[in-house]
Amino acid sequence: MEMHFDQHISRQFNEELEGLKTEMLEMGGLVARQVADAVDALANADSELAEKVLQVEEEIDRCEMELDEHATLIIAKRQPAASDLRMVMSVIRNARDLERMGDEASKIAKMAIALTDEGTAPRGYTEIRHIANAVRKMLDDALDAYTRFDVEAALKTLAEDEQVDMDYRSAIRELITYMMEDPRSISRVMNVLWTLRSLERIGDHAKNICEQVVYLVKGADIRHGNKKNLR
Amino acid sequence: MEMHFDQHISRQFNEELEGLKTEMLEMGGLVARQVADAVDALANADSELAEKVLQVEEEIDRCEMELDEHATLIIAKRQPAASDLRMVMSVIRNARDLERMGDEASKIAKMAIALTDEGTAPRGYTEIRHIANAVRKMLDDALDAYTRFDVEAALKTLAEDEQVDMDYRSAIRELITYMMEDPRSISRVMNVLWTLRSLERIGDHAKNICEQVVYLVKGADIRHGNKKNLR
Image (tube, rainbow over all chains, first blue to last red; front, top):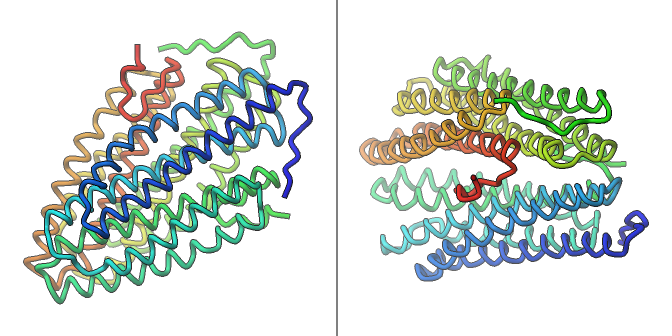
């Protein structure tokens, strides 16, 4: 799908908008890497990789602040309207969701360190792997949909969040039953629970990016299941 | 503290900015009410009040979308710069934080319903009450600091989040120990844990509003502990 931005007087304005988009997508790539590394660190009890994730978090925070600053500058200098303005606003919103995903990746990295210290692998790793794969795919697909301004792909990805939520809830129920049967495992299994929670939130944030694709292309706000805004 | 907005050609523009601020603060009042009701519903096993919280959530979602729309319209129509633009941007960001707090209030309301169904009061209610009071105060103070554009008050409120985080972590540790001692309580205590988690997040969001007061007045981005930006 082709996105038709308003005709700009200045070619430089076009380049600024393209630059903003690229910057956001680069941040997205960095965050996707963080999520993947955090999950791998947990699955392989690799505390070195987990430490690396914690170090990169600062870089992601910086990305968000820079993106915000660049976006605000463009608004002040270029006074964008219509789809240009929506594009700048969507970048600001996505930057925030990406930063939150980075936070969740750091939380998972901390759990990886805690779980590595405790030795034996607890229950719930299969569920973590399963849900992690689903939300990583959601994030990749959401960024891809944004890259191509592809509403169909965004709506398809958005719908996947329901399955993630269902799998999350069923995993939590299972782990609570397991803790009741083996109370000595509680402290370890709690770390698995927090990890699942973080993954579920990453899925929510990926969903938000999809909603921004629709907002950007269609000018419709479909947040909060507000599909009726989509014509 | 007095905030000096740029001199506006149009008096109507001034009124639009004031209107936007009022609209955001009204949303803030509504969310503060939701948080209070959700906690009361839990403390008093009042599932009717909890149901009311769940019903009002939609209204909050609508508030966020409307605020976003009004803010974007002002940007497109008035092309604000400097502190005017920062004010509009801060409203957009605050609306998002407020909406997230509303989400957390709904999660607490759901826990209240689950806990009421299960009858007997589990451990952790004292901690919930304690942390709930702290974050409710943070939210009130954050909105108040925004109303008066008071940087000192915002920084003071922001600092309170550290104590909330500490209390939260110590409560979680205690409840995990309790679950190990009484495994039959696990499923009930888990609902208390999720509630504490929601309260802790509400504190985080209140902190974000404080950061927006500083950004708005000083033009400095102090997120992610970036205090060096504050001169």
